[in-house]
Image 1 (spheres, rainbow, N blue to C red):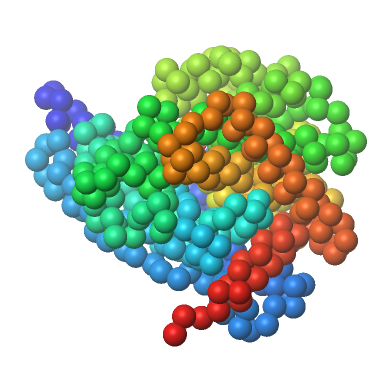
Image 2 (cartoon, rainbow, N blue to C red):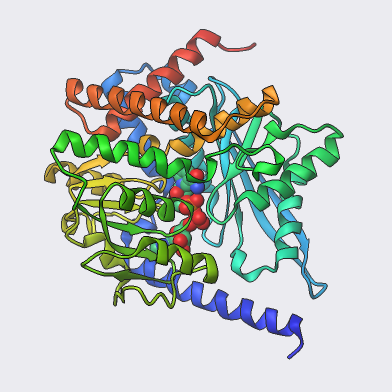
Length: 446
Ligand code: NAD
């Protein structure tokens, strides 16, 4: 079969499989139907009530300031043109330029992007970095695209949205299914239009183009700082503790590596293709090697495949790391979750209904806006280095990251204790207060 036909057939097969999986998920999980953005607003309301925010303070902080939707026409390798819907949501810029990644995924919705942008505002605020919140997304299954098609899609995204972006206005970065290469294409497109080399317009770039040392592992390095602190509060020894990790991409693989380095036995891992378990502990290096070679955990021989991948969340482990997508821990499965610590590597993995169940059970949930803030923290450090044109060794970046994450964890933990609220509500209280104060100081223009 000629290569174009083969690629088309493969794309159709992947799309069919994805549609079946989406129907299965939607059928089994009620909360998939309700919106991530509604969940985000529920979280806001819970914290705003405790902060006793006024209506004016809420009006300045709660909803996104700008929602942009465009259609990206892209020429496929076979000559046909496909249109892709794409979004950029800027939630709040009271504390600095908007910051937030761009996601390529078949299930992206404007609603999801609004939720992710909202979480970015409060994530930046909780760790105290001077940036606001934004997020981008394209409805596409990137597995159906060739390298050339992915490049043309990435460039078109930047070209269509170029007026929104800039080192002092809105700084995108990577997210699910976008990495350093996509950032490099987008940077090049921006630079070619502006005729100015401005690497601070985008973060998560390859090191050769002004990326920061330590960015690739930053989210999980921050996560492990939080896990260590949470374990210490619970009196849990990490050496010999067990962990399960859902999602084995950037966040999941690095989390597995850092947990293993801390003496934790990683007994289950899973990705979009399936999950694997091994009671005596999975060789994390071997699993990462498999994913580097194959692009997926499918076919991994170092552990036993699980019949239902979602069961990974319910295993009797000490630490559970959801590091895939949102709405994974819901009212349907929260009661069956047995982990003592949930370290939210993903954004929005736990619904508000599930949160209430976990709080009643006494599960120590390290909320996403704190737990995975290491990524945006090092993105900010990358942006700082770009603006100076001076680059730090990895140790300096990692030391700054650790200091920022430890301080943020301690502040959230203290707030949770003093106000007798969950870590999630406490994190939002710390963050919303900062955004609200900045908004009030700036006041309203005109
Ligand atoms: P990635 O694309 O590198 O990896 C995503 C992983 O999730 C893949 O292994 C994929 O197979 C898996 N996955 C997708 N759907 C799944 C499903 N239904 N069940 C199980 N696994 C599934 O993405 P990433 O950068 O690792 O991001 C993962 C999560 O972490 C996302 O929620 C993202 O927003 C969040 N996050 C990432 C960063 C970062 O720096 N990369 C920072 C903060 C938050």
